[in-house]
Length: 189
Length: 46
Image (cartoon, rainbow over all chains, first blue to last red; front, side, top):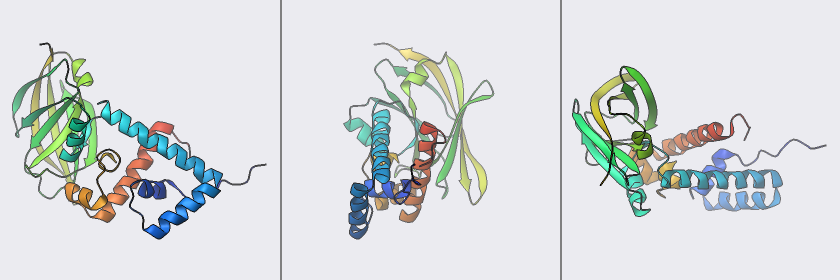
């Protein structure tokens, strides 16, 4: 008969530990326990696999969403080809990805106030096709960065995509801006 | 999560990037990891 599983080191502790953000005393205690406890050791192993999978998914440009310049810079260092579009409120911008592009970065401008949580919704012909919410702040250039995998764009027909950006501030939603992308499909050199 | 585990940024820098406190960075990160885990593994308890 198996006893109740040891729950001493959970996801939160493993996250802070892997991030290198625990005080020295706690690090030693966690490491001692992980060596001694098979339940928590197994959980730590699963966590490690999970973090590697996250890195791999990002590096292979399978993941979109709100990002910052720090993440884009790291992607560039890893050789990921990123195409950027700067969009002002109400802009209507023709856009396309080249065959070797891996990620499209929308650099969205607008009056973001002090918000640090935003939702981006993409609509085609009045229907929402994607929606993402994230904690992020504008870059030093006053832009919010949202990345879309080029593979997703490639499978779109020539279509007009309306991008709506909403800020969540003090319990209220505020529409920041709408941007229009005229997708022209995939370009070949 | 990306800033920590992909861009290797520490909480105080992330806090600056995201316009929140370092404590909030940890909270947001815990919540995000729990949600990601749930998305990937379904309802398997941690």
